[in-house]
Structure formats: C-alpha cells, structure tokens
Length: 150
Image (cartoon, rainbow, N blue to C red; front, side, top):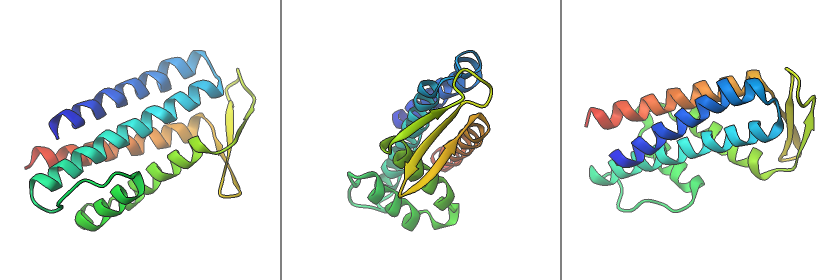
C-alpha cells in the first residue's frame, strides 16, 4: 500500500518534469504521449494503493485485475470521496492512448495531439495537459489523505 503510493509520487514527479521542462523545450506529440503515460501510471499506482488499503480494512476480498473493474470497485467503496471525476479522467486517458492520433502544430506553442475516442475527436494541447496534470495531483493528494489517516 505504502510502496504503491510512493511509486505514484515518483510518477507524478516525472510527469511534472515532462510538463514543465521537456514540453517547454520540445513541443512534440511524443512528449505529450509520454506525459499522458506518466499520468496513467500515477493513477495506476494510486488506485492500487487505495485497493490495497481497502483489502487491508476488509472492505474487499481481492483486488480486481482490469482497470475498469478497479474503478468501479473504488466508486462503490469510497463513495464519500467522490472519485468519479478522477476515475473518469483515468479511463479517458487510457482510451486516448489506445486510439488513433494525429499531430498538429508540432514544435510550436499550440502543439496538439488529436486522438479519436469512441468516434469523437479529442484535442489535447498544453493547456489541457495542465488540467489533466492538476486533476491527477489532486487525486493523488486525496489517496494520500485516506491512507495516511488510516
């Protein structure tokens, strides 16, 4: 539980570096994709940490294997935390990474990755990445509060 939380913190540090350093100097879709992968990893470790906590407190018998079922279990167990927005973002990021994508305005301020998710085009630029990053950090803080107050 603690180890997974520490792994999540390490991943958010790497995401921070990608957002504030790498993306600043290398405005490419590859950096955007790397950043999204780091955010997904942060969510993975934080979710695992919460599930281990729930198992330790006998709220669940076993930890589900698939990301979608993990999210559903967390939504049902920790209703008071209002995790829906965070977990929806996590599932969206996973879909974005699996979908087909194109590039626009690489090497410029408005570098954009356009990903197709469920027949809709989603545009991800630097400003949207900041929103995703901040939401991921907020989720990590929420998970940390739950686990530290145990």
